[in-house]
Amino acid sequence: MTKGTYSFGKKNKKSHMICRRCGKRSYHIKDKVCSSCGFGKTSRIKSVKSNWKSAIGKGNRKK
Ligand SMILES: [Zn+2]
Image (cartoon, rainbow, N blue to C red; front, side, top):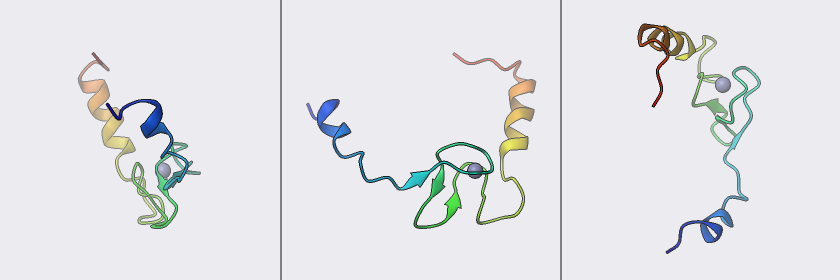
């Protein structure tokens, strides 16, 4: 019942902005940490490398 337009109305307070390192909208404004690559928390890229590694291993298959 509350899916769709109603719930979209709540999406105007954004907790994440576009990360300047990985380009995903995973950079948390309050925490100042990117949940995708770990920017702000670590100087190293957190999981991007393992992501493409597993993607290649699986033949980059997605449903
Ligand atoms: Zn990032």
